[in-house]
Length: 391
Image (cartoon, rainbow, N blue to C red; front, top):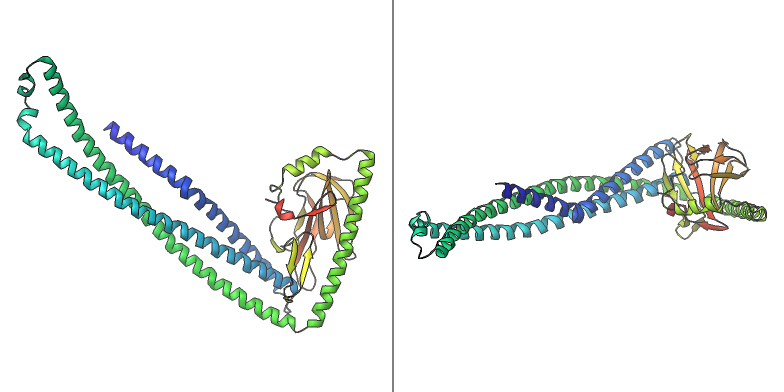
């Protein structure tokens, strides 16, 4: 009995271990991704409600809607990955169950054969005469050993049969649970596809409205490009001056720079919650298919009244005004982080700041009700993708 229980425990632990490492690990990762995407979609929906107060369609609203569509597509694809994994597991279990049923039948047959042998030799096996009729002591020992082994074999076959049944039931139970999960995932996927189609229709309507004023759009593009070039030129100049001055004074904190570098991919986001509406690098214009706009950082839409948060320990390098909003640059040795589009600023040049500290209040557009932080990361004089630094 103890042997049987031990075997069953070992089997269950082994089975669950295999499921966790082979399927469970990826399943957990997918579940985390689903939760993250659902959270981001909820955030974008809340932000869209804020921007929808403005009856006129805006570029920022379209960008936010495009970001939400991308998140929905990612979520639908993640559901598909979950479904593929579950279907693959069920298919594998079917094969295992078939093999186990074959083993069960084989063990049953062998057990029946052993019972038949036991029945035919019952007079010998159950009678001491079988042992005492031995020609010598050694033969008696062999016959005794034979009877013991035969009985153990019978018991073992019973254990094997029970174990086969347990394995089959376990795999069937897991398969049934997987089937129910598949039904849930199909329902969730269908719902997201419906919402995606609604988002796409809303986007097309807003783009069509905005395209009516083609001249204004082109003027806005030209104006934005000019402002961006001026801002980037100013940032580069400030960084060059800062680094030159620090190198001359030999006061660059190389240890801080190393710590910043070692935390690549682990830095907290510069907002409590939000969604990236403009990625680093070339971004297609929301309404002009042939136009791309280069972004030196990322733009994160967030809630009205939200604060920009410092992503790592450092020192405020400089603060300057662009004409309507403020920019704060924080130095981390030879690295710099930049927080732009701020209204009220809580720090001043030279202040030492900590990870998570409030830098300032993010500006909310008067015309579109969009609250968006522009965030950049610089390594010396080289611009880098901020998303590769954030966790």
